[in-house]
Length: 208
Image (cartoon, rainbow, N blue to C red; front, side, top):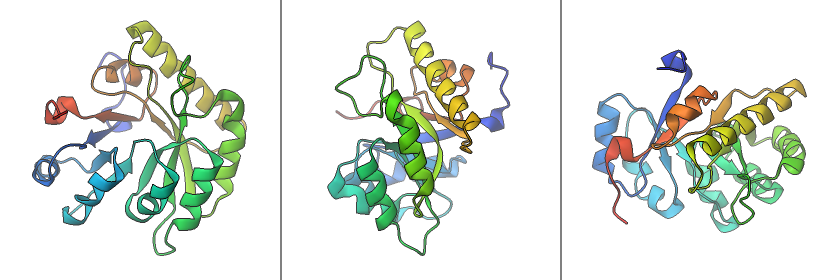
């Protein structure tokens, strides 16, 4: 790897949306343990049927009426971008489970219509998540705009890396940067990503 990163410093998150249980089981057999789902209802048809070691990450946009399902069935969520969602997830996390692991989703540059927290609101949301009992703040996540050039995409990753560094210097303990998908994971790794979200490269093209 040109980024000269230790392979163990990056977690491969297999994005299994639109893929059947059998495909997830095959990925497990190949040694994968982390699986990402974008749609709550679809995920609930799979999670109960996967045995063995599996860590479930919710990586899609989340509506308020779906927070309980995520709080009760997932280990991670990468897309927290509002205080309201954070509070609901915390209050709905069952006491029998460890805290839900949280990444704050950063709004992409020029992405006013996209999900994500603005830079000026990032520190206050980080403070809230850090204080909520049912959540554990782990890091930041971004999905660059689809029409970004490779240079623009890498700049987005570098921006989020700097945000994380600034927060750590302010006292937050964060160890996660969820950045990079099938088309741009190499740039993400070069900019410090610790979780790459790969679907197409692992499972092939999805049905639309």
